[in-house]
Image 1: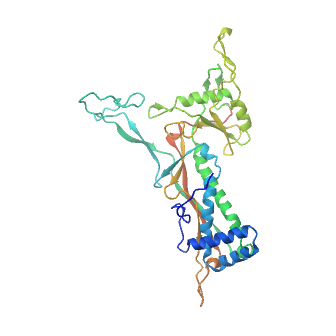
Image 2: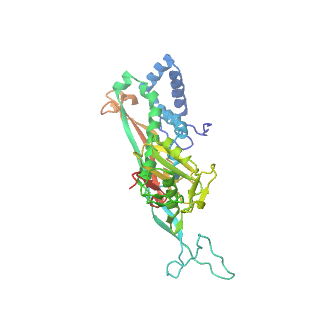
Image 3: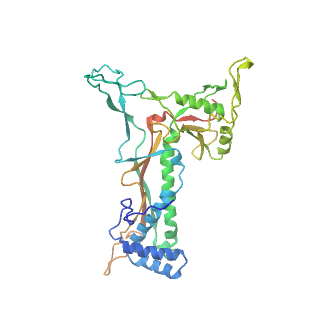
Length: 380
């Protein structure tokens, strides 16, 4: 993947904020010294330690860390993107979805202004157009929140291992941000959905409630999902399902999916045995995803992102704050008789430099998770 080229690399065209003490020249100096340090230059290492402990270049280093972090963050593999879409929102308020209701101005309730499949009516010549009102179905079960943490870079650690944290900082920041994203999606997703009720399948078998993973159970799960509705309309899935199973059970799940149906009996008469071509697999559109958010024999089935008109689950991003950022605090105070203390003296309170990670995000399951099906695998 080719890295994106920004017109203003210091702020990544608005994705990153900038401290007033940060300039392009200072960032370039820190970048050159850091690259030489990582290549083993002892002179660069000594100079980098010198400038970071005697000047305000710490702020430029933090900006450089953010700039280096951004492409790593964008290109990092994510499991949640296989499960959820992304919705960018302008505020921290609760998310709403809107839909049309079949009502006109007579106040008598449903009047079937829209057709049975949601289509607009034909308007005869000279006839007034009927009203169809837009309404909020419900506040959805999720909102965007601010997350983050602080850590102190103590004076002692700067003396003993001045560049150790500098080397590790981008990776630590990226891992924390990625784990947060995963949690934002998986926490509401795992909690949502309805249990497999069980019932007959075309093979003639009867699937019990909360059935263990099997072909019959997956066929029954798709049957039950096909009967669920939102605003009176069935949820049509075009694009397949995701099957989530506990870590380590993907091999078994794929074994189940890749079996082929060779035949089934429609009754007691042996003449009613249908033979199915061995290359046909009615479960071929299901993709297995292993996750440590499930355990035991539990499994979940849900449409893939984009497989339905109404979304199943999204990760929320705040407009203007889509990228996690690292901040540095400087409250070193004044040296008595000596003016302003260097930023790298640390805080007035405890000689520490405080670093802060901040990101905005959240996860939202729409319509109460109506098109998510769960099974605890107990068969009861």
